[in-house]
Amino acid sequence: MKSLRSDRSLLLLSAILVFLSVMFSFVSNHYESRVMGDAALGIAVLAPDRNSPEWSQKMSLRSKADCFFNLSILSGLLAVGIDFFLAFWTFEHANHRARTLSDDHK
Picture 1 (spheres, one colour):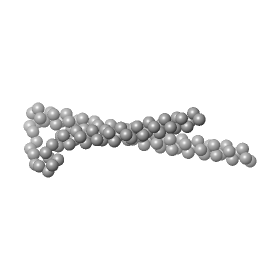
Picture 2 (cartoon, rainbow, N blue to C red; picture 1 turned 180 degrees about the horizontal axis):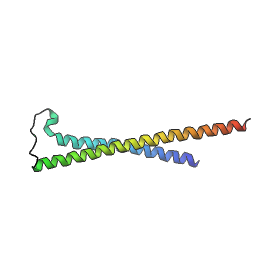
Picture 3 (cartoon, helix red, strand yellow; picture 1 turned 180 degrees about the vertical axis):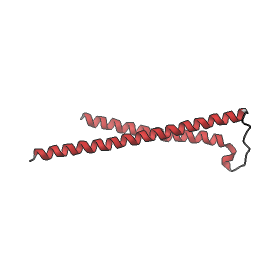
Picture 4 (cartoon, one colour; picture 1 turned 90 degrees about the vertical axis):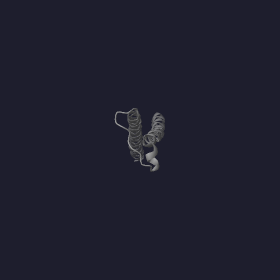
């Protein structure tokens, strides 16, 4: 009974991580689209001067977008890792139980 409860809690954690991964990717996309501005619409725009406040604002938005993208990848990988762990652990547990039951019937 305890292993079933821990399986469910790990599965819930995995689902939460997948949800967070999707949310982080949406936030990353939002910041990236703010960086691109009119260029995302296909309008040719000139880049601001490197020392201007507009340039530093765009670089700040770009670093936020990159950070949220990396968080999205990390949380997705953690969720997949938890799912693989659950799959192999459940398989080994079921295999051990089947061997135990077959040994009892001999």
